[in-house]
Figure 1: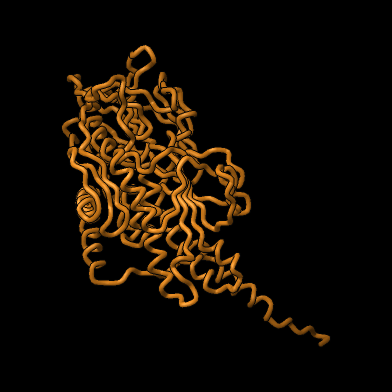
Figure 2: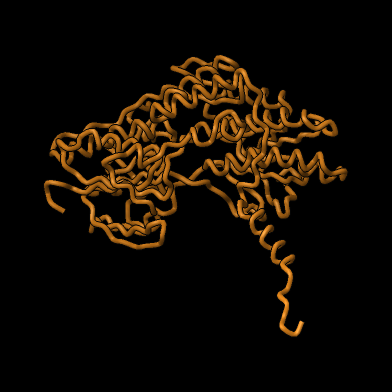
Length: 454
């Protein structure tokens, strides 16, 4: 590495990784640097629209951004971090084909995001699914449609009840948005089956706290609770799931029932790959950062060449009245932090002064299905259709790249005039099954070769 061309290593291709790379790329070639982004996936996912993917309102591909196309002049390393040593500024990477390599860097950006936080609940690993990836959202859409079809095909009332019971654990806005979208989908789908009725659908939302959707504030949280109950969703507050072995759901309130679909949306935690580094971290595992988004030690000293933002970072909120305070992990902060981080990293290379990240929240948005939602925008509380409209407008504009904005906005427009697609494409989960079955059948029917004696 030459002093004239420092190497910048960006770990993660989510909001922070994408927007940091974009911000740095703008300064090329006036500020010479080699930018490498490490990400196992070929795309970035716009997670706020995953509930609409699950509900069939948005095409899965339209909430992704192809990293290689979006990040020209950036070296995309398809793989993951294996280990990192801050003092020596070295990182060990593993490519998607298993090749291990060690790289030196001048600056590293921790943009590894977060993963689903789970607890050691019996049966959870075998029977539940999360709701953070596009694969999970698409799987749940297919799962709901397939379970309704299964219920219509059986005459066993217990089997029907199990197939039509859907349990969500976690009543934050992710869980509420997801269950709202999918319950709407199920109500539309069940109309196609004369042997089934809407009251047979059993949607259950479990929340350990005393309210749901706390992100929208106390008043809208109470409205959200009433709204969900009025839509036929069984909301259990101050309730947890103690077991789900073989799909038998056992609750802390003593209730027990069978469910074919269990979805875990009960919080997030920093990416555990951070355990393979010696980067300073806070009490909950987040990388500790200062207002300039530099990684800092417990004594406040800066770790040279290390930066962090987004869900894997603990960034102080200097705008809060009560201190200490930290910014919540959401897309609104991740995107804005990434832009400041890119500016500061370039400033550090050029020996210039760094700026602090300061951002007053614009508000909180939650969509509960078409025409329904809750929002706080600049302190103004909205509910129902106005909140949903603001939510759609914001996310339609916030989606990265003009091509994806156009596809999402036109898709929504088309949905106004066409019925929702209810085709479950479950065969994509095991695409080789039909081919293998055909081969096995062919092998059985191939006549034996005649011998000379015959």
